[in-house]
Image (cartoon, rainbow, N blue to C red; front, side, top):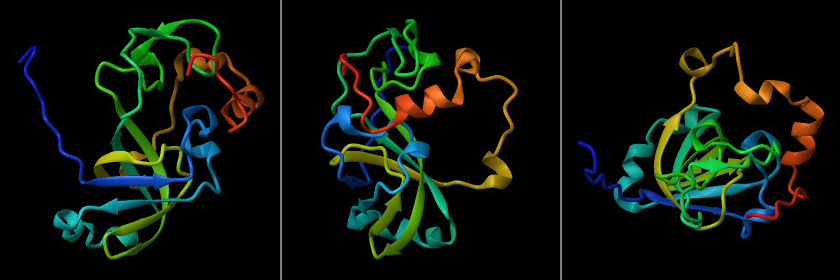
Length: 166
């Protein structure tokens, strides 16, 4: 299996007001009020049946504007290099993104969303409903992030936060 190719086709495209990575909120929890929509391609629209009953959904997408992958990165929350798999950076061996967003409503093949932290034009690979019954976990450890204050995290996660290496 090592070295085998895996191919995915987009099921749609994510539209948002975010056109630059530097001005995009970091993580959906800090993107409240950032509206967007997911346009699902017509051949997949039937798969949206019953989705409107969920308040939140997972969007899995392709970081189409990410730079080359790195195995060590400096996360936006830290000044220390960390392993890429211990960070939420787009510079991954497989540039896959995951966001939990609020589903406001569905109109045909369009999903209207809030808390969107995704660049406009991002290819959408999959949608899954967020279900608190299965997905909510009270974590015991958040790794290196446990040493950070909530105030510092909130400040660095805002749209105004600038990173020189993005």
